[in-house]
Length: 115
Length: 114
Image (cartoon, rainbow over the protein chains, first blue to last red):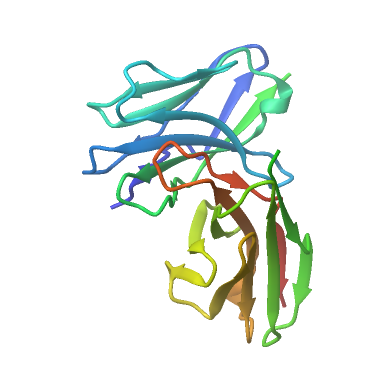
């Protein structure tokens, strides 16, 4: 079974609107971390936001926020006020407590922002 | 501040030729290092990771190997490339193995095997 599932291969959003990118995860480890990365066409992986399994509040970083629903095992990324530069692939990833720091990635969502 | 370098940026190699990709990290010591491969339009697959000099763990059996000859240097190699080795190779580092450690990535190497 996949540990990280991103069900939206592609998404479109109008400039200045908000968009939610879905991510569900599967783990039996009580301690884990969830990450979102952005990959523009240049290929670099850019860290966006982190949420720990024990964090009580949803993480926020500027226009990025994470809608963390632990019971549903979901960690959706919300981008507010979309900009043209937000067009990219977005990857959700998880690190389990028993790992050597390895990240498990989902297959990604391609976001296209329309002017 | 820490920076991570990869070279070459792009590489076109014939089937059966050898491969050597290099990754170096600056501005930190004793990092954990990782090699990932990304096939076109796909997610990242962890290939190798290293928690110290000479310590290499392999995640996926393949014709690739990795070495860590120095603290901040990580090398990905192959003796004979296959067509299926084509892809985008990313090196990454973390300061530790705790769950909140952010993993930072290099610019990547695009490899095309013909």
